[in-house]
Length: 344
Picture (cartoon, helix red, strand yellow):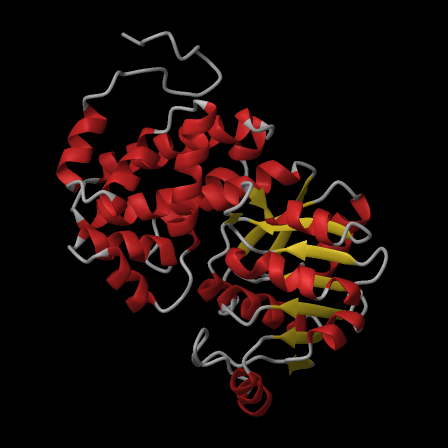
């Protein structure tokens, strides 16, 4: 374990809380920023973030605050766990607080609406003097806070960034692997949320294990095809950030996106399901952006198109499934057969 450092976590949601807990238990001083003064006071007095992690006590030197500038100025490394819709505004409004060469790592699995920008791209645009990276993987926050075995991926071009994050977060139950494909790791983390909603729908409809396996693997084919067309390394999707994260979120009721899909599959409207969840399910926003982008660049994504029809065009789940099953049977694994070849 690394010697004690000052680390800042921006965002008091479930994953930000989970990372603050790991850092605190690893002996680091954690400046834990959130907007809500009541939330700050609650964590300060009870050591519990009741809304997002009820019953979980945050051990160690954790310092909740609403003063972002002070929190950032105190830190050698900043972890950003802010929902994608607010990500740029928070970074931009506080850009002067970040220091030259400071390590800033995004934990957010989402895409910005305007310009189809990933969070790492926002960091490069708003605070180019900082060294940035992305943390992503099969990381259900509810398991991490219970110290269940978990692995993640730190992606960064700068080897010092990768090493620093591995040293900060690595412990007996949390293993941190490294990758240089920032775009691929980050895009995989955003895209899998779409397929977690699909998996939730399938579960609610009572589809069998064969069907669920088909949906997960076809989802992997779609997301890798899309990401590689935008410059990602296809091998990234064989790792924790790709297939690992996809499996975790498509098979677990702990996944927010899976639960949204489940609720819709049981007949609830999307707005009602999202309201009941009470937390941000990034897949809802990502779906719209990916459908629009895939059509603009001509990438075939039938699961994305089908889910969009169900959530936003009132198509019946049965009709979409029937349409998917009636489509051309093309190659099984991306990048092996050209898409013009139909398998017998």
